[in-house]
Length: 249
Image 1 (cartoon, rainbow, N blue to C red):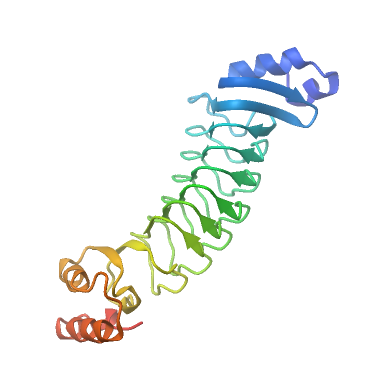
Image 2: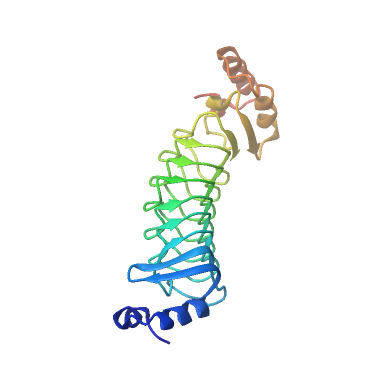
């Protein structure tokens, strides 16, 4: 097999194309230049290759770029611009350094070994899915998200550093949250109940609370009504029902 470094040194375009076709499924025109490969369409790394890193260096992809379900530990070589969605889920990534700077669609990095979101683009056009990792912080995640956001099934105790603007549901179930500080405003929230998690800031929001039907029922009474009187009434109901730990801001 011709290595990428050898290909660049020899400017062997045919060798690059051969390795590209062996490693990826391509749906679109291919442009090979000295600073990387551009695809006018979708590009998908073949699954089951058990690769620890991407075999070629990309510049731009005009569709989806998929490198899911391998053994990647690095995103070095990923395209810096993707018109549609970026899939790097189901690998062994501990970092997102090297990921695209621009993603027009969704960004999927769930089911890896991520401990940080540093290196992410500041904005993605679709949703951002980072569930089923080992995140202890949301610092570094995109600040503007054009769809939903999921950070469920991590090790978060806070939502600080999360997105500032988004359009969709916010999933944060199955973490170790002790505070909702950092939660964006005006969103639909799905979270897991904990006896000491302050919830009053969610009064009026469209929320779904796992693991406690009684608390969920109380909050359902106030959906669409975030007034001060609603907050005080909800607080009173929570305390009377024995959920004092949830009856604070």
